[in-house]
Length: 235
Image 1 (cartoon, rainbow, N blue to C red):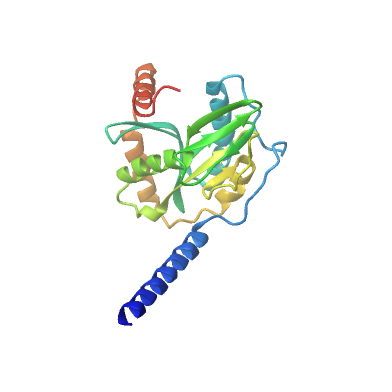
Image 2: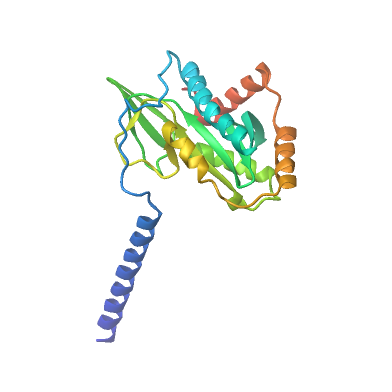
């Protein structure tokens, strides 16, 4: 009899635990799926090559960030390559303000996107073609780690990361938390308030990043590409 009661008690504890975990995951997930039309204003048309599309997307995001800096006195660093974790990591944009530091990864895709926060890779479907690409949230998390590693004098929560989709792609799954569309970026920046950073700490952060970033030249680019191919394979 005691064994039966023990088994029943254990079963109830397991059920309670599973329910608690499910509620926790639900709180962490993004709000109801956001569906965006690929024809919405503010998107960047896709170029003919991946490199061209990447530059177009980064230029569109850069324009919004520069305008924000002009209005607020923020500092912007673009295309920052840092030594990190035995290799190099390339960061599209780092925005530094008195209300927080934002690490930004830009993507410029067309077609349909199928994505999950915990997926190692996301899928792009363009016409009859299907492509896999690294989960940009994971990619940008490494960027965040590299920046945080340099700015240890700032609390971790003062440094945040976000992925901006600048192209005409449409998500066919719910849009993961931490992903924005280009037309949402300006409004998002107005809400940035990760913590109060003094002018001296802000200048120190800029100096640390400028000192650590690698010089932009063909050798740096080649070494970074070789590291990516060695780590993730040739795409």
